[in-house]
Image (cartoon, rainbow, N blue to C red):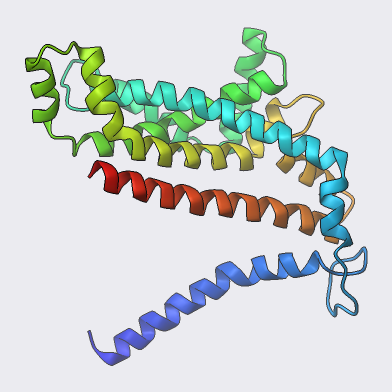
Length: 262
């Protein structure tokens, strides 16, 4: 690679970094503004907006509500996704392509169309808007990501290990619990965190299927109707920091699991 190409690639890379991080930096900075209006210049600074986030019962309730939904929907999607991935990977049977296509379809449907479809189907099934409906929709949407991640991991599992376990008298369940599941642990961890963040940040399905209690994204949207303010920036920044810390921890934990199992 010539020097000119390296310089060009470096410029493109740093331009992309600025494109991603400058809006985030501005969002965080505006949360320190001692005024109710967003804009420059910032004449005085305050921590009141950030401290107010942790003293606001409505925000804390929405945060807890979103976290509970994210955890429960992730558990469901991981259990179902693991079962489907084990069923599909390494097996050839009639209808396999159809099952795989139906499995990944929820990830390909646009969010607004998916939300409308879930709303109509929930009404047809008699499911009332609220936590249960949101968990159901998030779990269905997240299953394809679990399946794809776990199938990629399963494709690298040496078949000799499970065959050796079967030869030693282990039934399929014991072989799965002692061989396959530990091997899948890093992928399951990564898929779980990904689904957790997807569910926590989901707005469209939460908006269409939510009841009277809003999730955090829906609450932020409701506050935006009265105009932008440093309070919204502070709430969004706190959520961003929490998800970033969780993502970094998950990446390091998954890497450690890969080393232990690899």
